[in-house]
Length: 484
Image 1 (cartoon, rainbow, N blue to C red):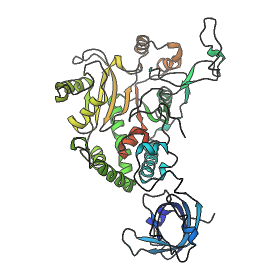
Image 2 (cartoon, one colour):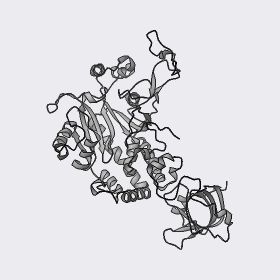
Image 3 (spheres, rainbow, N blue to C red):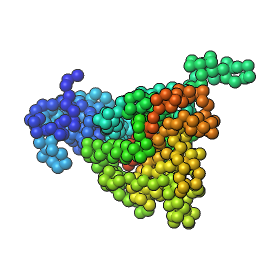
Image 4 (tube, rainbow, N blue to C red):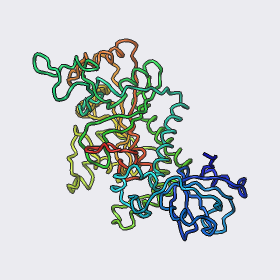
């Protein structure tokens, strides 16, 4: 095909191109008065205005210029005489690359519900909202790699198929080549996995953490960034069955180093988007304000999207212990008035409503909660030394809580003491034979180390302000939905 000029380049570097003949290609966002085409090729939030002379171009050709039709235009770039744009393209040649019959095409040039657009995920990226979201998603992913690379971390690819359950939750997708209707059986009637492909039970990974610990105890600083899977039957705005996780793991780190890393990392990602994607953020900020116009005041955001992002990067995260969090919640007005749906009690995990109270009402900024009860946390988290103020055993675990979405990071200092780790595994019924290699990391050349997992989609959701996590991943996988 003839060489095209990207629309982003045209709009940002037009001075040297005015008067030149250029070729652009893209999708029609609007066609007004049979004269003005708003053209977008995905490289920018902004459209290029194409001006057509209907007397000079074939009438039947122009009749095919419909919403989201794909066209190729060659013409002269000139300074615009109208308001709203610096330049416009005077069309000399126009070609339909792909038509879009409005009688059949399901998308329309009007506001459409998020639910409808999820059903049309193969088209929704063409909308202003989703093109902005997915450009920002790309920007955050790039910033993840840049941050860790610039800080001396090594990118580790951990397996997607694994024989271990890092979280001990059991909510996993099993992987097998055995006939599900008639699998081979052992003498006692159990499925004989020795005849399976891997000769043992396997599943899709819920975390790359355990393997990342192998890397950290050799390379010092590593990170993973890949897909993870949870077979949790949860239909909420915060959960996916397939999502991406970022998991740094660092040798010679304790829980406080871990908290510092988490805060610095989050601020870096947000600052990167504030600097490099202002047009997308401004569009999404305006979108939220329009959506909230008719909402009751108590349901509206306290700050706009961009204002919220700047507030996060300009302020230190609040740091409290789990015990302090429980005391704050039990002393709060919502608790005393019975407004919380879930009980607040030492030893029980904090629910989303509790996390959001701490972040949005009490401190009005991100909060890091640490030192959780051992009984509600994973076996690999380091047992804290005796602490007079804490009833019961606690571990050096942390959660980073953000406004609107609650937990965005979960992490801990890992248990490096072999005897303590074995005792914890026994308490939680984690078989030593399944994680023999994990124990050997402590037996030979072990050291204090720590790390965390950041749910990538939750961070994208926070930065874009989208209300549902299904709208920040191209093809969401949820209970009952594996379309596209």
